[in-house]
Length: 230
Ligand SMILES: Nc1ncnc2c1ncn2[C@@H]1O[C@H](COP(=O)(O)OP(=O)(O)OP(=O)(O)O)[C@@H](O)[C@H]1O
Ligand SMILES: Nc1ccn([C@@H]2O[C@H](COP(=O)(O)O)[C@@H](O)[C@H]2O)c(=O)n1
Image (cartoon, rainbow, N blue to C red; front, top):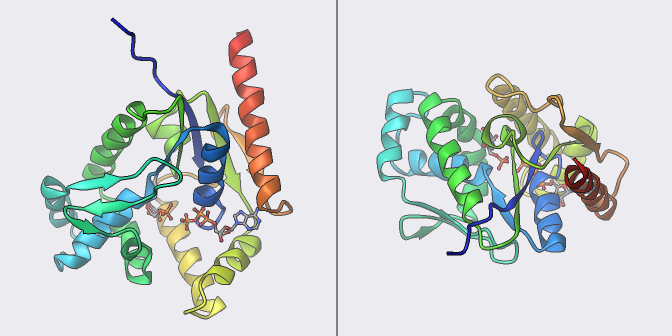
């Protein structure tokens, strides 16, 4: 009987706007790996809370949503989608309302436990030789055993400039304040501002997009070669 080999895990954490999703997706494409965006699940649950008019500050009410959280995500880097039940929420989960609500949902311990299990199962069952998983606690909680663990950072100034270039419907000041306040709230729950032991920092402040992808791929090759020699 064929033995199921676990996919190679590339874990990437970092603050909002550091380039986790865009860089991880591009790295997955280059390596022929799957791509798992974990923030999408927290966003989808926040979307459900808003849809059901659930008070996101009430941990019990948010936890109760988990029982009918019928969540699905595409892990092919070229076919990304997010659904809740029959509803495609791929775009809706990026709305300012969801971004403002998501940290309250993500701080509920029962939510973190359930989603961590879900991420482990999704990552273990991809149909590619590896998977790039990105979020806030992948290198530390979800997959501390990952072969490659990276903290992707950039200065607050660079992250804000990149994000506000993307969002044209809000002022640069509003975008910056939302980014800062989300990082502040999220970092009370998990530490994604400093690299844990064994985690390599890639600082993209002075790198363009392609250089950042190259830097991550370099870390991948260095770490996987070293693992082969150990
Ligand atoms: N090195 C870079 N140079 C220039 N732009 C970059 C670089 N890395 C990422 N970007 C751009 O910065 C923006 C934010 O990146 P991205 O959405 O991937 O960040 P993120 O860390 O996933 O953010 P969030 O956690 O808020 O979802 C995107 O427009 C992306 O194309
Ligand atoms: N591993 C993770 C990933 C995300 N979160 C929470 O979800 C929010 C949205 O994440 P994005 O990557 O899409 O920005 C984020 O602000 C966190 O609240 C998390 O807790 N852990």
